Length: 255
Figure 1 (cartoon, rainbow, N blue to C red):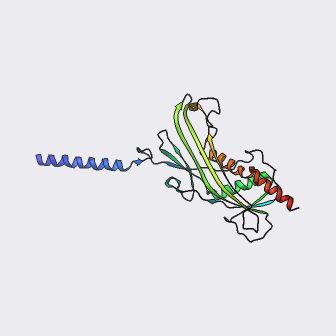
Figure 2 (figure 1 turned 30 degrees about the vertical axis):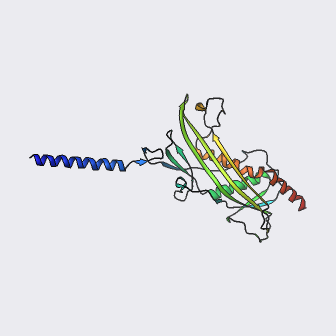
Figure 3 (figure 1 turned 120 degrees about the vertical axis):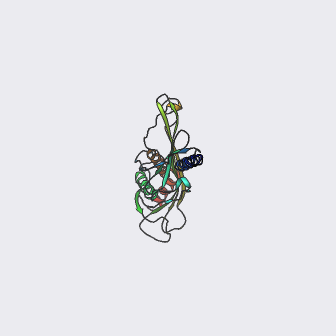
């Protein structure tokens, strides 16, 4: 009888041990070293905000420019792996720094291509698009300029900091960096090269005259904050005085 009782206790201990192991295996280890549920995912809308950046509209000659499809040349890390063909564009962290949500968007090439084309139109140029990603020298056509570009950075991070007087405080930082090369067919030597980058914070610290713990964000979605950085970085291409001067001088020579 004592032997049977001992066997039952041993069996019960074994069952408890197995159950505990199974429950532990169901936990997910987060970046902060603790255990938490696996991060959720969302596909954000990323777009160009027309006329948000002022000062360069209609300052270029009315010349034609073809915008090639930009290359996504970002360095891909574990957090930057795509999901179902959608590129990673950022994360949302909780107060402990653990990732609670991973952010994605539709492919960045077409988004940036459309953005550059719209900004070129604002500048006064006549823009069209091409599915090609690289410029092909030696081909003479009616296009006066061809713009080739690479996306070096496109990332947004939204994180929760300590709660303030008015409740939880969320801060978002977005970064966009682009390399641009403009050619003049059929020449192989670039007509102009440059890089643009922009970092945008929401909310800007001190923007409302409150303490940093009580600042309120302007945008609800991190994709909107990244869209602002994208818009500003793209507009910076045509805000460049050296590019404007080159095209204006080129316009004089062609007459």
